[in-house]
Length: 107
Length: 193
Image (tube, rainbow over all chains, first blue to last red; front, side):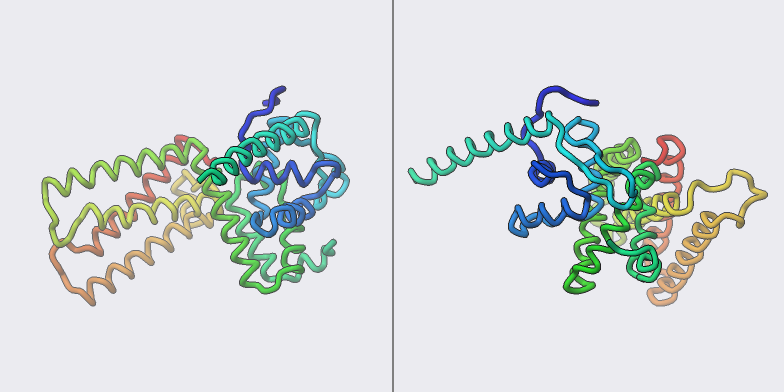
């Protein structure tokens, strides 16, 4: 089911996939490598987790399939809702980080 | 990109292709080719086979578990587990800490029994309903193989430990068969995820 409003918070896997797809279409292996690089090796995603998440994200309208000529290399891209959701989640995480820094600084 | 010839050669890739059968058919229809290609790419880039299989093992366990427990069959299994957890303290309360702890032994057999039947159904499809087709499907052969292995284990256990009170091996064996039966019924009632 496609929604028009972003649902937050996102799981780390969904957030990193959205981030990896921002500004560029990527295929599955490329997404896994980008997620790994973006997270500083903290998030190592395998194919099962990646495609399970992508299926749910396509259903939610966050991601769409691009090139499907080669079934081994299907490209995925962000939708407008995906971009809005990524921005909203980034803003939410920034607010959380600000609060955490303030509390840690006052401790 | 890895060539089709390369895809045929790797033993790891063939094993991974077999393990992919644990995913629902609809999921594989959409992603099998991509997942095999990704595995081949990961294998090419991996520092060692151990590192590769650790990543793949964790990925399979996490994604399959998450899919399974989100399905109706998964909810059934959770209900069974909760029932067992409730039954066990009742048995413990009535019979106390007996040396055999039959409920625990049967439970120890029940869970692998359910898992074995689930894996068999996923890999080999549903069993033949007609008795005339018995022994003809890979599923039936698998179930009979598991049955024979259980009997051998039971006989070995009996031989080594003798007719101890409570017969733990028999309780585990009984639990295993019950688990297989419970999962068999559940897959027919709720369908595979």
